[in-house]
Length: 229
Image (cartoon, rainbow, N blue to C red; front, side, top):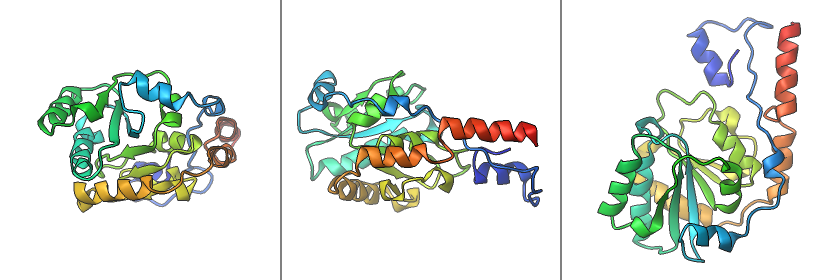
C-alpha cells in the first residue's frame, strides 16, 4: 500500500502492480478546522508584527535541508527589490531555523521574516496567509506532501517544486508547479504572478477536497475495504 502513486512505485522498485494487492490509499485529513471562520486578517498580521498591507508567503514543514527553507529567503531577496509588502512566515522546527534567521539578516530581510517554530494550528495559518510555498528537494520525492492538500482545503494558492506527487493536486487552479532548476528569480516572478490573481473561493476548494479520496471518511473507508479484501 502506498500513500501516493509515486510512493507505491517506489515500494515496488520497478515491478508491475498486482491488481487487488498493490493499491494506493491516500491519507485522510480532518476538514473540520477548515470549516471555521478565518481569523481577522488585521489581528493576524498585528500578532506577527507585520504591516497591515503585508502579503504572507507561508512555509510549513520541518526546517531541514530536504525541505529547502533557505531557498525561500533567496526568493524573498529577489522579490524585495521590487515589492515592499511580501513577507514570509515559517511554521516548523528543525536545525535550519538559525540558518534561515541568519540568511534573513544577511539579506536585510529581518523585518519581513517570521520563524514561528512548532505550531499547533496550521489550518488557521493557512486561512490567513496568501500563499503556501513548498520548495522541497525533488529527489527523492515526498511520499505525498499532505500540507499541499491541506492548503487547498483552506483555499490557499500553492507554489511547489516537483518534490510532491501529482496525487496531491486536487484543485488544479490553486496549484502551480515550478522546478527548482528554474532558480530563485523565476520562483520570485511566479510568486508575484500568483499574488496578482484573485484567490479561488475558499468553500469551493474545500468542497472539492471533501469529495476527494483525501477526506478522512473516504480514506478510512478505503482502509476498511483493504482489510476486507
